[in-house]
Image (tube, rainbow over all chains, first blue to last red; front, side, top):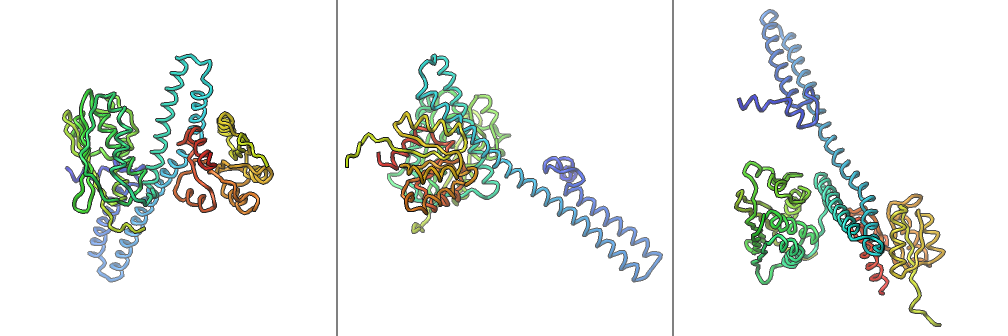
Length: 316
Length: 129
């Protein structure tokens, strides 16, 4: 039964975004069918006409059939790849276009809220502030989309600079203090006094750390703790972020690092986020030579961790 | 020679989007600067050479002449090559940054990610005020 499910051509066509007649599985199946058919026909023909010419002709037919169907499969694959590339480029172009009105809103709101406030009622200011927050969320989403498109096109370029991971972690914790306090979450850190410098992209590593820590804080319902541990060992620097929050349901755990993954718990507990953070973070870590994993039990909490290699070649 | 320390610094804003132009002008004037504006690359170079501003804010995507060419034109002219130029744009790849800095831009800010206040702060940093 699993064998037949594997050949669910309609599903494959939908997944790949092509018509059923272009689905590689279908073409492969067709090719197999033709070969069997031709072989059967050849067998019967050879029963009546036992001559090498018939053999040659029939084998040529088989070869021609294999080549043409094979060609169709390749063309189909090429089209799928091309469409994929176009979609990625489209995301890049659309995101850049969005930056213009986003810049406009960014600055107009700033002017409104800083130098042109007189005459505005408190209610109006409150509304303007809400608009500003929405603009900021949108700007973050557009930046994330651009990063995702770059990752998909293999164009995400990471800086190579000396990075002090402890400094980054301290700064990120600081940035998340207000959020933590408002959710009654205590953040604690266990870290060594000093860590060797690593080579990486400071800004992007900060994004990774911020993603894990802010997620940990956001997914704690009422009151809880986030424990961060940094340790060096085995030529690597390991960073662990553990929380006692709502956790991720078992049946969703395979999709955690996928684009736009938002756990059911997220929607339920009304956390904001783009769903792209983990996809981008995992990719950044891997591009820097590390790995990221997690463990989670619904209702108990989650533990995310990653490591970055310590490059001994610090000479740039 | 008497220099008034209260002399306002002139900032040339080369940006084709009129909303962004006006927002920059309004903010910088309120911060005590004098502003000049150009809506395309050609006009930008013309005003830059005529008025010799203290600093130029330059977008990359412009009609008639793009930011890189404006950069080249300003840096290749003796009379304007020392005017600091801050690239204000929404293009963000590392290549764009390196290209701009390689052509002589002082620094590079992504519009959508920076507040007007931060732009003004950067200008003051570059001008040492």
